[in-house]
Image (cartoon, rainbow, N blue to C red; front, side, top):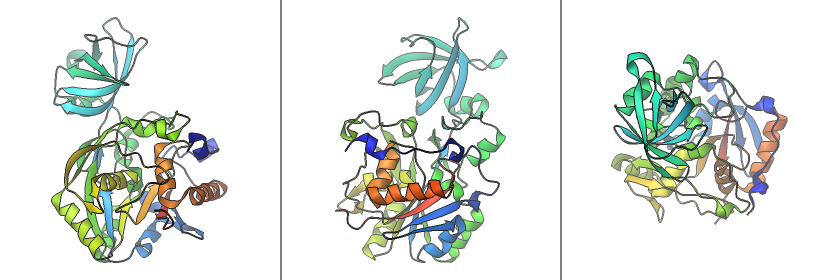
Length: 344
């Protein structure tokens, strides 16, 4: 498969720059095998069977963007991709010249300056060692790492709205955006209807924003992401599958965690790294339905949803969404996808 097969033209004004005033006020495009239906996101209550298992990614976005300087005064921007240890991180670094091991950066100011030293380079990422606890530093001076297609600088609204209401475990540099539509009252109503809510954790990495630049999709290299599935979560999902109840993933990251942990359809608990790259032709083992936002052209996430629902069905859905002026990407509207049963 060639990456150009997953390209499309999007009017720039359809890229949502800000969240709606109410989280669950989004639109929902229901994508079935033979029809597309325009709905409100709150219709999800009626669209989920009472015995369904709804799987959320409870990762928490950290304020991963740091702006600093070299001792010489040159500007430095670091995006912390992963916290390795209390004072050591893996980060994308933007400077005028590629830094060498031993280079120091200064972040913060006054008596609160933090020093980071470059220790190594691994492909696109640099390993930085700080002179203090990184999570505390990010909380104090870091910025919310908004996606590159959002034009404004992160503000107080983004600190609260670029985060799910159930976020629990810090470590992501991008929000699991399908979950942004859910509110506490909506979750409570789903529970009362008998929908089982299950949480897994996958720390979304910076690679989620990187397009597939290789002409052949198979040549693209996925960045590794860490995930964890508890014993209780694995048991709930496996019990649902054994009983024939639907497993519904909220977002592509929840789906990747489940499929990464699946062995012959059985979800294994534990913590692992995943480089799972889902493209058309992939055989899904766990997930029956998927709630997801609209994704960037030529992105790995667009390939995933095309594998799940079928390439032609996704093309039709995106064309419909553009014609109907849906809002796209992180702060945009959502889709409810059925797994293409024609897939192996």
